[in-house]
Amino acid sequence: MKICCIGAGYVGGPTMAMIAKQCPDIQVTVVDLNQTRIDAWNSDDLPVYEPGLDEVVQEARGRNLTFSTKVDEAIAAADMIFISVNTPTKTFGMGAGRAANLEFIEKCARQIARVSSGHKIVVEKSTLPVRTAEAVKRILSSSGNGATFDVLSNPEFLAEGTAVEDLLKPDRVLIGGESQEAIDKLCDVYAKWIPRDRILTTNLWSSELSKLTANAFLAQRVSSINAISALCEATGADVDEVARAIGTDSRIGPKFLKASVGFGGSCFQKDILNLVYLCEHFGLREVAAYWEQVVSMNDYQKQRFTERIVKTMFNTVSDKKIAIWGYAFKKDTNDTRESAAIYICRDLIRERARVVIHDPRVSEGQIRATLTEACTDMQGNISDLDKRLIAENVSVAKDCYEASKGAHAVAVMTEWDAFKELDFTQIYDSMQQPAFVFDGRNLLDRCQLEKIGFEIHAIGKS
Ligand SMILES: NC(=O)c1ccc[n+]([C@@H]2O[C@H](COP(=O)([O-])OP(=O)(O)OC[C@H]3O[C@@H](n4cnc5c(N)ncnc54)[C@H](O)[C@@H]3O)[C@@H](O)[C@H]2O)c1
Ligand SMILES: O=c1ccn([C@@H]2O[C@H](COP(=O)(O)OP(=O)(O)O[C@H]3O[C@H](CO)[C@@H](O)[C@H](O)[C@H]3O)[C@@H](O)[C@H]2O)c(=O)[nH]1
Image (cartoon, rainbow, N blue to C red; front, side, top):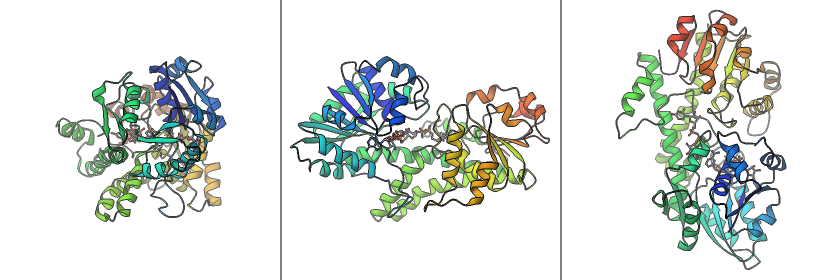
């Protein structure tokens, strides 16, 4: 069997590497239009940082795993084609700011239709609005070469930072489709390493909708505990204690109850907004408003964090140096998409603070590019002032010590384990006094820091 995957991103790369590792008899080719990305997948410096991924890629690459830009060739040769391209929120036209931009999906479907012959199984791996498979099937049916297709939905549930572990031992694999034969073929691939009872099969629409629903439920838990964190700060309750107390109720469970500066990542906000758009499309205004509140609460949490910094630091951060520890949207990834740090840094420099950022996996170029994007409006305009602030008030440090030297405050944005192991006395001595710490992840040992002399402000703690 030959598999082709279109899209060598955070999902396509790791997912296909795992299939190739577990199924040495299957030839897997991952294709992308982006030559730089493909070159990186073929190098020792992979474009995606994930613990354990290097080993998986090294085992299979050159054996039955290939990364290439020859998209037509790989599609033509494959029996099964995964579509794993990006489906970002639309930034223009109808549904701007809400609907998913399906341009890349449609282009893939047209390309598959154009170059295919014989019978192929097309698998939606990207996260898509419910009923996208209908459009994909119509486009594929226009293939002029007499090719025939089955379309399956097989959404991916991996989380970044734990992708390898999640792919190795998923809670479940979900496959939606109409043709039992096609479903069985894809089941057989996963069954090489995943117990059959963890492979769930549904109809196409349930599978597509389950992916959006899973992300909405997960994000809702984060927004719920973040909402309670605001009440904790106002009342003297401690959000970590509340989370522990409610999480031990087996009906609630302990996971996804960590209060934070706000959820980030490429999926949660995009997928909820997509769900909201779908609900509005079907006239379900109350349902749309219910889910939209999860995103509004997340925006409020980020904004509240910046306001707390400014208010605590005597109502001004102008010309003050603030060390930003972490920029990725969570630990163990180099991904910064929708990271809360971007918006906190943007708002702090607009208050004229000088931010000095350190993240162990994020480059200066990526930091400047994401800040520029966050300051750019839907029409593509960015003010001269924002450009100047990004150029002059943002710098990048090689470690937390350098970032914190001479700083008035430290803001913890990402929960990297290494941040817990620092010499805090050295950091305290190198900072301006009073030395403030704003812990956006409740990562640091509050008692230890207070003993040294820091004034610490954590999420959901008064
Ligand atoms: N990132 C995650 O953790 C995650 C997890 C589960 C699901 N998803 C979903 O998976 C999909 C992919 O996400 P991602 O994070 O991997 O995106 P990504 O942006 O990292 O990768 C997508 C890749 O597709 C390529 N591409 C776009 N159009 C193409 C075309 N016509 N031909 C060839 N290549 C093309 C792009 O160049 C890019 O490299 C999205 O729908 C996302 O919602 C993401
Ligand atoms: O208790 C928690 C859990 C998470 N987060 C934050 O929420 C965001 C998302 O975290 P996580 O879900 O772990 O990472 P993602 O890689 O975005 O994974 C989510 O999005 C993927 C893309 O759709 C899905 O495949 C995964 O199942 C789903 O967990 C991050 O900013 C986290 O810091 C919290 O603040 N508190």
